[in-house]
Image (cartoon, rainbow, N blue to C red; front, side, top):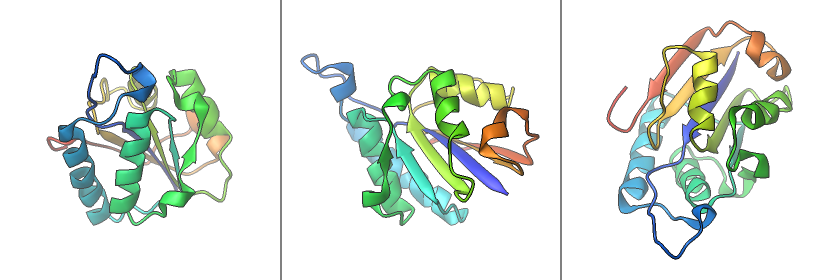
Length: 160
């Protein structure tokens, strides 16, 4: 059984002098990630691989989530294809995952993340900041668009 978790970066700040890629997390974002991490940890989420967008807010989210899930921060992979990351770019990253990685989290951005989650599960129409959509399935990463998901869950900072 494989698990893919699509995690939208936490709430970010919008300082006028910074580019979109350099925007940091807002105070609410730095509070939401550890809370979400504790909830995922309580559900026994364990990661084999954590891949993040290179944007400052996404990488900060990934680092905070790694700490909450006891994932070594030095093992966080940064993939340029996740920024800004449309759904097809995200899918390309997923399809190239090694088969021995069974539990993978991508930290990325909307609208691509919500679009991909919706492709996988029609009931998911929008991922708010710091939301985690998890998809469990039997099959190969390269065939993810053709699998039947055994379970789909959506966790948001305000509750499932």
